[in-house]
Image (cartoon, rainbow over the protein chains, first blue to last red):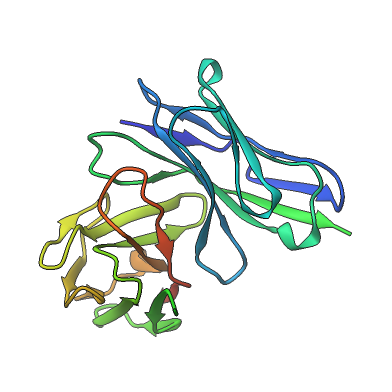
Length: 114
Length: 114
């Protein structure tokens, strides 16, 4: 069965600094990959997703993610973090034949220092 | 469009009590999902409904029942609540039950079972 690992439970960055959130997946083939963001007290919102093609994917709010097959990774990046980016970020995978079910990582809580 | 709405926002139950969590979407989506979110565990799928009139078990269905009342509404019922069901519950919907579809989430219901 597929699995998703987000090794960082908490990350703190200063406003204006760059950000990279790590995500590793375990699956035999290339899965469908997603990043969702959850602001405090809110539901999850899709930031971006990757299926195939260009391995660098652009999303909303200035985020991007890069798929690296050799490392089974799909890390999320942002060049300059804003205070409003403080939230919890979830990586998720979906696999063919998996019943169209998302498997989520455990999340990374981002704190932004002003 | 309100998107995905959930009621109630908060609920406190005593062990053994029953309750129904309501979810509705106004995006004309075919598929709907119920997740629970627990600290350090990400989101786990409880039940889903691929289309009106169908429901299927997800990863953690025990202790829950669901009803797809119509295309808009998908309810989750706890027949006899247990402390282990203390969690945050999210409803989501997708246009179709196809791989890669973006899931749209409601704001969640926070449930405490004493």
